Image (tube, rainbow, N blue to C red; front, side, top):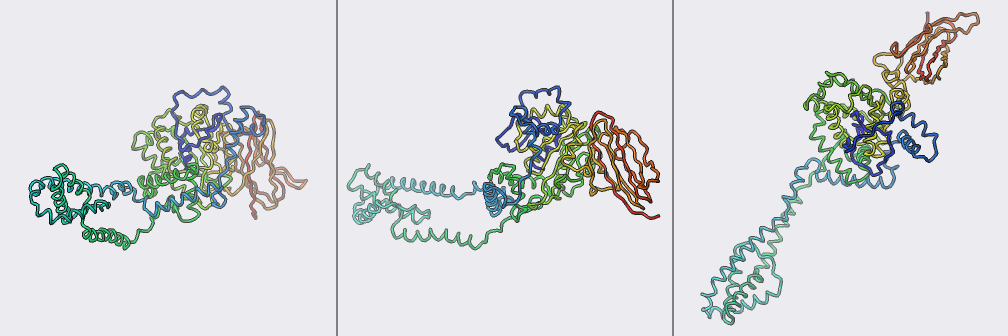
Length: 602
């Protein structure tokens, strides 16, 4: 997904917690840096509070102009990142202008078939018509040199023939008159060359009568340079020189120019409608609205997609061994599809070896990752008001870390491809279960990232991971392994059934009541993130003479016991079901629950 798309792919994607150094100059790419000095060691309190969310809550209330508080404010900006509009009419004027200029460049490239005829474009300098006149000039100079040699050899034998000089004298005068006018370029055909030789010989004889040998040689040189063709021949040759270009132009006019080529990316033509504008805006934003840079990026992307064979890749069967490593599930609160990257799966040595052991396996992993991304992108809505980005959730729990050379090579290779060819496809990067070493890596790489990229990053420690996810993704959309209630298979509840969130204070009880009517079947489910609480349920009838029914005996529930508790109760009389959660720990707990009633008859 965007250049940030693979930041989700590689475990060591750059965090944004360390924001004391801000790079104002936008950078095109965000590659893993190789600093000369080692990263600073984390402070003692870092492992206890590595979550960005906790810092952000403090930053909202602090307004004093202290250095530390400024850093917290910057982190707050990462959470408040808002996607820019894709509606062309709502863009600022400079961005509108940039979009129009990019469209013009692409249209010219399509007309010239620059996307599909790239090799021909490279051969153009070799086939340019400019070098052609040079050989002609050399041939003409060679002819003139030959003429001079002939003329230098003939004077001694011809000077003694005085009668010829008298009869040809007028011709010599005519030659001198023509010397004052700039001569046309000498023709290349043989007859004209002979005429020039005759005139130069006559001129030599005329000069030889009155002047010495040195003057004769000068006359020969002057006549060779000045005399190109007789006036009569000149008139005949000028039309013939004009006929050739006219005929070529006529031939070119007769052949109609080829229609503009059609180029599409992710199934969207480069120039067609509003969806095309959305694609172009992605490239412009990736290059900070520098039109030429964005245009070059588009051309390179089109070329890479052809070389990589994207269209055929979509139909390849690359297996499902990695379906637990990268998968799509649910949507965030703004409607973005959510992609989960689970790096802890690579703790399985067999899976790790089968994925990264050699270059061939790493290449297959790369193709699988690109295929997965392409299929996900095809499901996006590229209308200006549609959802055309996604949220990346990166689970770093039990991640192999940066010490694994093979994993680092594969992720770096994928990072380079994704950031160059998939711009602006990530709306948010959420890192959960962040270990302490990741914070040290953040300190090292953060100065190399643009503020725009860092504004999309959110980090959370293991203790804050579920709470952080719920800030952006509703609990009913979050998988159970990350604190939500979304499960595979047929369940009583679906993502359409909203979940209620409640925070239970330390050493406090909380009760949830579900009112029911006669002939009703009440179904509910609940979970406490982290559990370690006491849970019980009972039915209390509305009638004063009714009896309370114990639905579920009070018991202590730990994280290892159950993830989600599902239960139900049928009754033929009105009343209420009361759930009691007793938090006896010193930490606050997040309670999630939902219910529904179904009518029934005996």
